[in-house]
Image 1 (cartoon, rainbow, N blue to C red):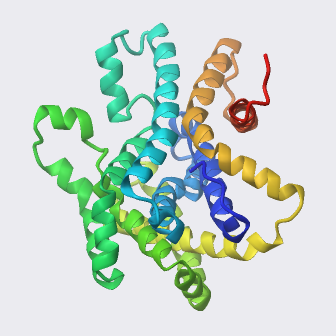
Image 2 (tube, one colour; image 1 turned 135 degrees about the vertical axis):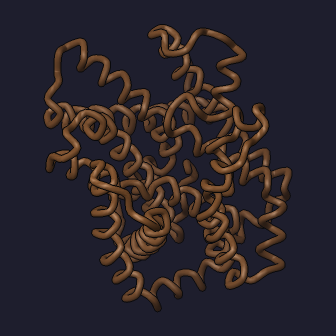
Image 3 (cartoon, rainbow, N blue to C red; image 1 turned 90 degrees about the vertical axis):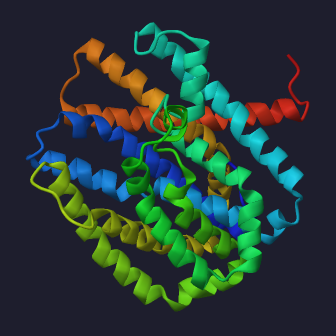
Length: 353
């Protein structure tokens, strides 16, 4: 996230921006899902919107693995890789965590405590989207392992094993008793939950041209998997979320949906990328470069808007949702792009206060 692709890899930017904006929409739907009647058609529509946009986080892990394994990235030493990734990820995350924490202390959600702040920041628990950063940092620390796996083993062998680990990871960690200190830090935030998506991205990046040929060759199959799994996953999500009942193998269905959705979206991005020209190229690059900041701050914008709506007595979910989407998307996108431009200007020495 936040690394604009060259013109030859513009599809990376397209997919990254789609994932990022999808996550913003996903979190904007949380309030109506919490407050609407679960048996109403409005609730079903809100759940559908969330299901359609929930691909973002698995997609981010796939893209992270893909970019890590691209030939240009593999030419860097581990020291260069660690320095680059930590500089991009950690300072913005720490600032975002602080800016989230202090409003929470003012409202009484958390007592002010540096120890508490440190623990919540390490866990990625201050805001719903932060856990992605913590899990991604785990993958980054394990970079030597993934380089070894790509060089030593075939994806035909490793990907089914990684899929099994991903499928069982949540159940395993929920079913064992972890030491209290470990549970406090990493329960629900372990890299094994997403290892399939990251490792699949690694193999896709390592043989990128072959991956593109694979997408083109299997386009009909990918399309049919997407067409069949999407309404099934949506219907299952509406059924279980509304409290009508439980369904077996729901997690397996969701994984199938994520895989087909990600491949379908990536295939379309590859086809659309050459058609992007002119001002659209600059806009795409700006959105791509600002995507990490958009991801970090959109929930803070949602919280601020919902608080203001409560004080103004705005309670109708339909108008409030439209307002939330318009304000949060415009504020976070415009704010992140402006901040990126300002930082670029300052770093190039063109800003003279």
